[in-house]
Every structure is written in C-alpha cells, then in structure tokens.
Image (tube, rainbow, N blue to C red):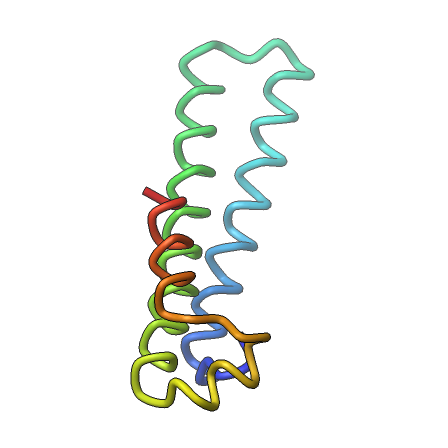
Length: 92
C-alpha cells in the first residue's frame, strides 16, 4: 500500500473499517442468538467489503507494477506481475 494515493488508501481503509463494524454486528448477533437470516446477511456484507478492499489493493499494485516494474519489485519485496495475478485469483 506504499504507493497508493491518499484517496485510494482512504477508500480502502473505509471499506475495511466498515467490514470490521459489520463483523462486530455478526458476533453480537451470534452471541445474542440472532436469526439465521440476520447472521448470514451480515456475513455476506463482511465478505463483500473485504473482497472489494482486496481488489482495490491488488488493482493498485498491478497498476504500479505495470507502469514501473523495477521500482515495484524493489519497494514491494520483489513482487512480480505473476505474483500479483496469483493474489488476484485468490480473491476470486
């Protein structure tokens, strides 16, 4: 995330914080014997928020890796386009 612009980083953090809040709601619902529908709906929301944050992170890294592969390899511990592709596929 070193090379993400401030706006992208803000969006990613907002998604992750939203997912954390939704996960807290899931935990609370389970602890208080919430309905199956409520728990599953909240779990789906957490999963979607995390997936979107992940895609934003990988997308930004791919852009950086493609536009400046040498700097990306140095700054991202040798991360290659091939490794980014694998990371992307782990999210799908």
